[in-house]
Amino acid sequence: MSAPAASSSAASSLVPWSALARLIRLPNQTGTYLLLLPTLWALVLAARGIPSLKLFVMFIGGAFVMRSAGVIMNDLADQTFDRQVTRTKTRPLAAGELSRRQAYALLGLLLLIAAGLLLGLPPLVAWLSPIAVGLAALYPFSKRWIHIPQAMLGIAFGWGTIMAWAAVREHVDVSAWLLFGTTAAWAIAYDTIYAVQDIEDDRRVGVKSAALYLGSALHRGVGLALGTMLAFLIITGWLNELQWPFYCTLLGVGLFFIKQVRDLQQPVSPARAFAMFRHHIWVGVAILFGLLAGLPH
Image (tube, rainbow, N blue to C red):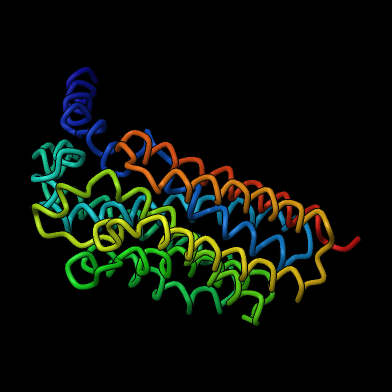
């Protein structure tokens, strides 16, 4: 019995668990939260309150799985670029800790898990899901084609709100599309702030980003995106007859946005840009509680 056990232990030691965990950004789940929170907005608004535990759990799981799959797609597409960028050159694929075959194997497993989650949701959600995968796959390549690839990320993240709404209502209406627009505009703003970290490297290697494209108008571009987000939320609140706590929340969020836009008028260090990006998790949480508090009783 000892020989098979030893063989199993040796095989296990060959699996690069640490590198696989870093490949899916396991130590840093900011992206998962930013993908998850808008889906929770949609679930709450569509359900007119707390959604079922089943939907809640499935969308939490789905956000983790799809964000993990998305970053693998990103690293597979950007492996050559990542080796030339200070912040990304230590990623497992760029550093040679993992082979592309290992990355594809984990990606396939994650997509199988995502497909399994769909089995418990209405058929419309399953029909919408290939679009989510396609958008996630297109995003890394958009950095070669368009000056504001953050727009593609916003569309990809926004699609989660459409799927969440369909999971509750089994159809998609105007409010769902407003939340889609809200999420897209929000992602453009916070991912542009995130891209400030790589401006010089992006310019050198030829990768496009909104931060690089906007240049000295960075604060105006981010402000326009955040203003658009708030406008969509106000219209959503009006259509759904949300009460004053929701609008008070938006006022607080708006003041925070003004501060960030003012900060961007001056040069921002990479560390500061990352901190500003992470603060948007709390924006998403505040809006979620604002929606719950603002629903008519």
